[in-house]
Length: 308
Image (tube, rainbow, N blue to C red; front, side, top):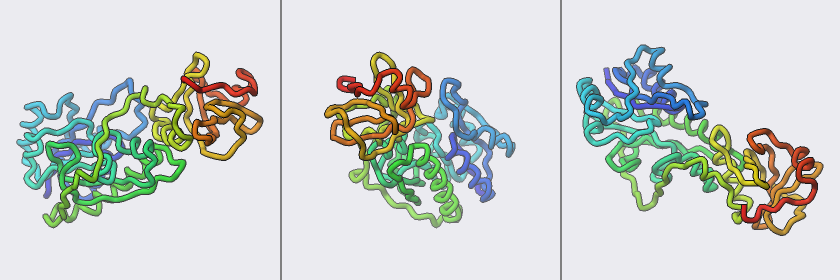
């Protein structure tokens, strides 16, 4: 029986570990994370899945610590898999697996190597992304590709919508590729990193809206960081306005410069390029805020967004 040590977290970790178990891969050790109570835990639990299958599980702060490396080496795994595990695995770990260490990445490599690839793809207005199964090297997301699956990004899809699609694509890719991996016939396609891109992580403050940008760029930011992520925001007369869902549409434009305004049909943002966003969902000071609330507080006159 093929044996694999699995590093996994999040929905992709749950679905891909489930694929391994469905293919009767022996998993003598699962390495995952302890949930951070300060984080919005909206996703499924690898630890719970592993417990349900009575799989030995550890949650080290550092997966590259000597005791974890020694434990993994003693298991003599055929493969090592990383499925949305958040730490880089260093060469001493990668060298343990007899037939290779593989990672499932949430983009169509070599595009969007690095952190939070789903969010970046939406923010940048891409029309597709996907999941890629590839061999791990010391350089992040740079190893040979085994297989990948594309998924569409529709104009109003949020990052959460795309994450669910990417999770399904990851499950498909692993299920499709695993028989060939197990019998040693899986392909290996080198990446041309010159035709790719690398992105770093994002922080909540990166959701601040730059009203000098076009309506489409702001719409992409809103949907790229929409809940359960921290959300896009701006300052509005001393308070924080979170803009959580928008749609690009033609509409009345009572202001030549960036401004928020409301009327009987809704709340809108006039953008710098002449485009208009209908604001479908927003919060002011942490509470839901409607077009009626906007009119009651600010009246019908547009509220300027210049210098916000």
